Amino acid sequence: MKTTCATPRKRPSVASASKPPAATVQKPRDIKQIIAINSTFLDEVNQLLHNGGVLFEKRIDVILALIHSKFGDASFSSPLITDDTLRTALVDIILNTTISKEELFQKVFMFYGSKYLKKEFDQFYTPCTIGEFMCGLLEDGGKAIDPACGTGDLLTHYVGRGRVHLWDISPDVIELAKQNYAFQGKDGVARVRDSITDYSVGAGEYDYALVNPPFGSKTVITNPDVLKHYVLGAGKKKQELGILFVERSMNLLRDGGAMAIILPNGYFGNTTAAFVELRKYILQWRVLAIIKLPQKTFARSGTGVSTSILVLSKTRADGAHYPIFIDEVVDIGYELNKKNTPYKYKKNKTEYVLDDGGRPVLQNDLYEVGRRFAAFRRGEMGGCQSFNTADLDEECILDISRYLQGYKDIVENAAGKQPISAFLAEEYSCAFKRSDDTEYTYLDIKEINTPLYNGKKLLGHQLPNRAKYMLKKNDILVSRLKGNISFTVILEDKENLVCTNGVCVLRPRDEAAMLTIFANLFSADFKVQHQALTTGSIMETLSDEDIKNIVICTVVNEGKYRKILDSVKTIQEEMSA
Ligand SMILES: C[S@@+](CC[C@H](N)C(=O)[O-])C[C@H]1O[C@@H](n2cnc3c(N)ncnc32)[C@H](O)[C@@H]1O
Image 1 (cartoon, rainbow, N blue to C red):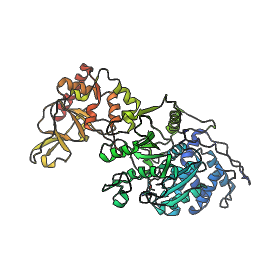
Image 2 (image 1 turned 90 degrees about the horizontal axis):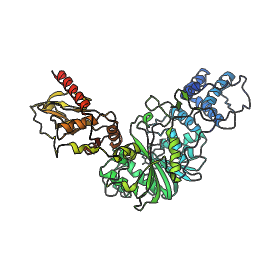
Image 3 (image 1 turned 120 degrees about the vertical axis):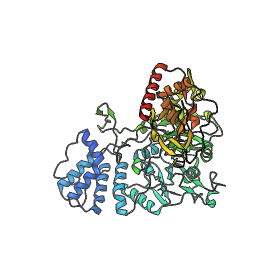
Image 4 (image 1 turned 90 degrees about the vertical axis):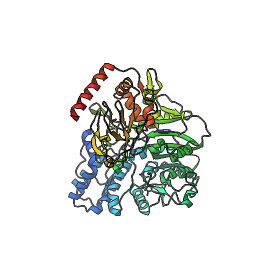
């Protein structure tokens, strides 16, 4: 695997018209206009073609010619565009976009491809900047495969640098992939194939595999005749497709080959047996990198699943201890919280950052991650984050959150700190037996308004199943969900006060311990640890044990937090009066 980062985008070549338009191309626009065009170019082109009377089904030919003219040698010409003003306006738009060729094609294809081919896209396709990054990891001249290719976009940046093979189980999807590559004038061998059932086809033939497999607990294989061919499937009633794809992708590689695969974070951190087994399987091989992607990476495809890229070499690790490169990506070049995830550009305070060609630079950490990974592979580890396989415990947790520097700085610098468990009562249990006719005050997660709480009066038979814990004075409740951490403290002994098992109940050994824990819940260090220890792919949570292991300062500003507690108590009493 190569160690340089993603290929830089080409400087757009300005097509020289063989039959120059009568009107001259407008001068390049200012940076804000370019940024606006990058977001709206397809709508604008579409509108111009509509106004120019070009039928919808003919428009794609014009747009493809337009894009090819931008990146090729030929000037833009189309028999459908005879009006010079329209021609000039179209050329003006395409010349002023600074989007990469692959991304332009992906956008056009997603918009027109499905309409022309009358096929719906129901897959989670990977944002272009991630495909660009993953292809940037590969050496030129290799043979690469995507065995669950969708429209094949993960490998488009490798075409021209190496051979590309695409497999997908769906004939419709393969038709789309072929059409996509044809649109782009790219070569790739696309085949309809069930990569999992055809478990031996292509084994050992590839230098690289780039994969974003289908995953999720409902996407499973149950056929024993298929499962028996997989180390991670044999003897099981079912196995997740995503897990089988890890093994199958390894099987497709030649010795010394490498893969980069996008997997849900639950695979890296869940402690259930299937995932521990998967990690043990992975660790037989040399893990090169684990790169955590932003939670909303796949927002455009309508899924909030949080994922990481695993880079794995088909080289036996043989129990060796070695460092694994890790990194966390915040930005991938798109506004992931906004509808249709428009581009996100780098700014220096208020000014856009421009590259040598005067084009706006995407706010895309993957460029830097690529550079850091390259340096790490060369042995220049300063400025890079890593963890050593010697530090893995029995569960082989590979979720990188707990190995990142911010978290390590807190837990490794343990002076004046102790785990929360040191402040708790010994072996307490909050379980209770509900009685149908008894009235309870029930606290759901929604009832916790940090640091206050409300509560609903419910009879025993009305309590939801998740009402699991009976509370006492001084109990502290902390949510186990990633994100804004809700917490509260019970300041009075109240009969039949119960709460959801969506929170962890911390029962301090005395009042002073309660104050110490309570004070620490406001600290940044607590938040960092809470976030770092969450695992899972959709609802990222942490276990009670993890919360109890969070380290907190033993000395707190007692006066300040006592005052806060007094105020909380007063407000609580006022509210329940
Ligand atoms: C999440 S999409 C990824 C698409 C593409 N690689 C990307 O990243 O944009 C997963 C793809 O796997 C395909 N797929 C599901 N099961 C498969 C199997 N057993 N063999 C081959 N492809 C499969 C689906 O049809 C879908 O196109």
